Length: 236
Image 1 (spheres, rainbow, N blue to C red):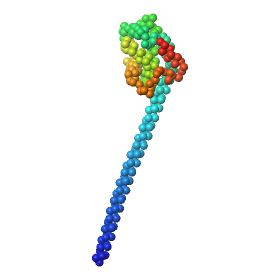
Image 2: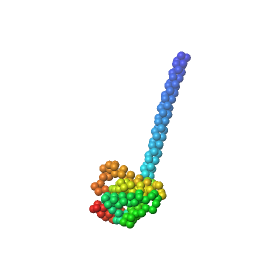
Image 3: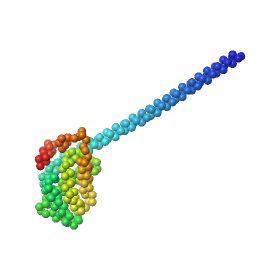
Image 4: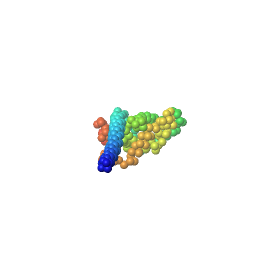
């Protein structure tokens, strides 16, 4: 009987040890399964985040390409008109242009606000040409402010000339004089934003990979007339 009791006790011990081992293994398996499930959840979330990031990058690139295309299209369609108006005005970098704009500003300042401004016969035609010329760049400013046009493309196409135009207008207070006679209080706001944006770009060092020996519009200009205009401009 003693032997039987010992055998029974030993069997029970083996069963208990086996049960503990099985429980321990089950706990390990459950823990491993939980770790795998957590890893798969993180991996799945990362894949979803990566897909969203790729989609955002694609949307951003498409929006950029659309802005560039719209900017170039506007620049191309208004090229002939800009050349025509420039032929009626002194070159923006010259003293003659500064004197002209200053005299026009004085004429506007001399008239009461929102009254008929009397421009002398000598400057009547150039005043109209300057008005139309600025309207073209006001439209560009509107496009830049609304996110339809790309200001970096504008800067590469004709940034120095536009900045010179803005500097002359600021030095003579021409825009303020014109605005005193404007019905729209927002007049020239987009134009000034364009000038400020181009000045900001000019103040930033250009990345080395984008530096070129002759950064001009020939890179982006689709018509042969653009390069001829640039050559004429460089000889002035």
